[in-house]
Each structure stands twice: as structure tokens, then as C-alpha cells.
Amino acid sequence: MKIIIVYNSKTGFTKRYAEWIAEEMNCDILPYKEFTEATANGFDIIIFGSRLFVGKVEYLDKIKSYISKHPEQKLIVFATGATPAAEEETINKIWTDNFSETEIKTIPHYYMQGGLDYGKMGFADGTMMKVAAKLSKDPALKKSYDIASRKFIAPLLNHLKKDSKAFYYRADLSGYTEAEYPVSFTVNSASELHDYYENNKGKYQFDNGYYGETSMADDMFLNASKFGEAFFNDYSLLFVVLEEGSGSVRHKVESISAENGSLSVNITKTRPEIGTADIAHWHIVLALDKSLSEMQKVIIL
Image 1 (tube, rainbow, N blue to C red):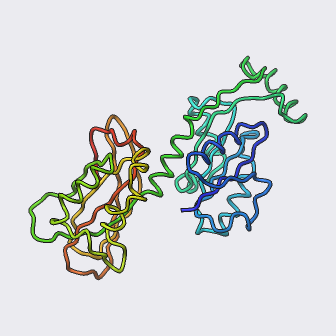
Image 2: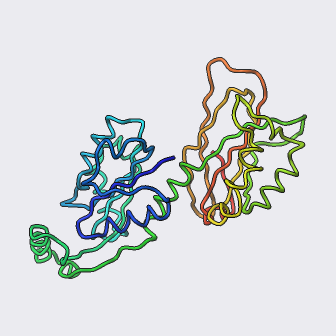
Image 3: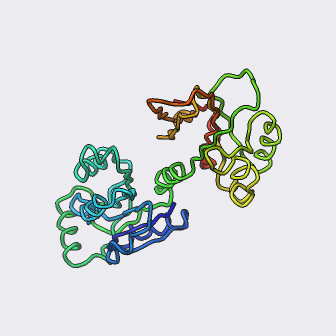
């Protein structure tokens, strides 16, 4: 999945966040002033980051206009500002002022606190902020400050990782085995992945490439370049094994959420009007940040 970060930065806070995200995702990064249809062509996801200016995410409307003409590309937005991220009411108003009700539900958006840097502001912006500082009762606005932190990119990174790291493999049972589905478990190392394969290759048809696709054995269990120790330095794998009454059923991981030590995975199913009558078994495998793999309970929705 190809990702590009397009950022608009005046005093450096948005650029810093964009660079941090690019480092984590090893993806392309581009200043907004160089953004064109040609430079955006070929990317699956566009992450747009910009400063807040008078309550608006600067240039967001132009990015949304571009996306409306290219629905095959996904948009993710992050905004930076001087307001602390803990001020949820203020942050929520920012989103309702910049997105429609539909866009709030369909466009992932994240706020990342930055700060103020009077030394890098232009004359107009600096003058405006100084007037606002005089009218405000908040003494913090009267001088420059930096409250940016790399930790604020974590929610966006987790969204990207779960969105691009879901794998779906059909691997039917080799014979009848009584079991209750769904089954879920976590794999934390290449050796654990190898052990699962060795212990279950007689139970499931891992070597069968259904519908002309690469088999689970070749794509995962025997693919050290993709799922070797380097992979497990950053991720763990959550396995969800499902049984379906028809091989025509397809799945999609819609969301993952963590709360109170539990990890909830929302998996939707698509059923055709006329499907096959064969029983199918699926391994849905999610690459999770190590912190999410430590949840004590997994709930499949």
C-alpha cells in the first residue's frame, strides 16, 4: 500500500509531525506547495497535515476537492495547533467546523498539539496572535512554547497499521474436527508462527491456494522475508479462525479498539444472494502493534 504525506507548515510543528510519521511508515513526504495531481498519482493513501488557522485546517478544502475526483484514494487528516490535546471540547469543535457529519465518520482525523513560535510567524500571523494574546486571559499565549510530542502520532500509526496489515486466508479442515468458532490467539515471534504451522498443517489445508491465490503456507508460514524476526520486532499477529457455512462468504476487518484490557475486533461478512454450499474455514490474521497484543481479552464482533 503506497502512502504519501502532504503537509502545510508555517512554523515547523506540522512538518515535524509529518517527518515523524514518514519515519515510522517509511513513506513519501511532500510539502503542500508541491502537491499536484501528478505528484499524488499512484498513491493509495494521502495523509494531509496542516496547521489550524482561525479554527480551520488550512487548505483542507482543496485536498477534499482533489479526493472527490479521485475516490480510489483514501484521505487521512491531521491538524496541529497551540491548543493542548486534553481540551476535548475545543478539539471536537474543530472537527465539526471542518467536516460534514458524513466526513467525520468516513475520513480518519487526528489532532496533534504543537505550540507557538513567534519567531517563525509572518508579520500578519504574529500581529494577529499578539492581539489574541492581549484579549485572552491565558498567559501562555504571550510567549513561544513547544508542547509537540511524538506520542501524538500513535493513534494515526495504529490506524495505518491495522488498515494495511489484515490478511485473509482460506484454509479448510483436512477432516472433521469438533471445535467451537471463532478461535483467537496471538503469535509473538517467528518461532511461534513456525510451531503453529507444524502443529496444525495436518488439520488445515494450509498448502491449498484457493481461487488461484497464494496459499497461506507460501504467503505466511514459509515466507521469512515477510514474517521473519524483523517483522516481530514491531508487530505481533492476532489470529482469528472462523468457520462459515459457505465458501462464498467474504470478510473485512472494519475496526479494532482497545479498552480496559480488552481488544475488540469488528469483522463484517459479505454473503452473495446465491452462494456455494461448502463449509469453509478462514484464518484472518492481523498485524498489531506490540502494545495491543498484550490485551488480556479478545472480543470478536
